[in-house]
Length: 324
View 1 (cartoon, rainbow, N blue to C red):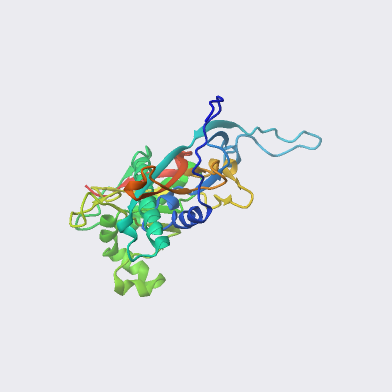
View 2 (view 1 turned 90 degrees about the vertical axis):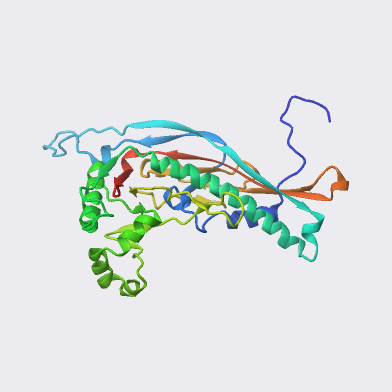
């Protein structure tokens, strides 16, 4: 192969059918990263976006206009930030014995699932670290694991404190399973559920929303080794806080036009996952190939995606310490 100075694009191109299977399976499941930081697509691995100021919600001038006078003059400030999507990639090794008595397509789909699981765990762990690093904090006076917690009052107080930061109420609250269990037996919440979701009262589970705030309770785990070994929680490993967030519900990506509303969304959200479609217009690229050593009778199935997680507006996140 001649060397002409150009980037050497590998001969193994993404398989469109396998890639579409991966794209359909990358979202959802027991992971919550996509709910806390919605995914928007971009056409390049790097770029720049504008973050608009808060003039729209902050009165800086008197808008009363005298007859013949000019309208009040305002400005819309903006700052810029850059993003650079880096690649998450994982591959599975399949041997001739793996296909014995099996549908080959099923075996390859299982390999895709394993690849995606590893990538999703990595993304979930990164998002959890960003949530844990939110600087806006609040502590309740009576801890929720004590005899007389004041959960509903603390909930409303935190919701109001959040509003005073940016002029908008949070729409999501991430709660670890341990804290969710404490909340589920609280008398005030049970009374609230009685009138809003009576079917949940007997089941002893929390409603999907409390006072306009959606509850996001993660259950994703990291498997430490063999199946017999205990799992380590991503989100519930000694967690002592709940996290209120405002997540832009309008974060969209249109695969038909390969466009997103990233600039408009960036100003009004706590954070986003920016995922590149620079590889053939795909958000997830899947490939399979045989080992060059044919005697190994080995096939590889790999998945990769390019993305970066960006915290945009720190005011739209608040951690509330509720346990000791």
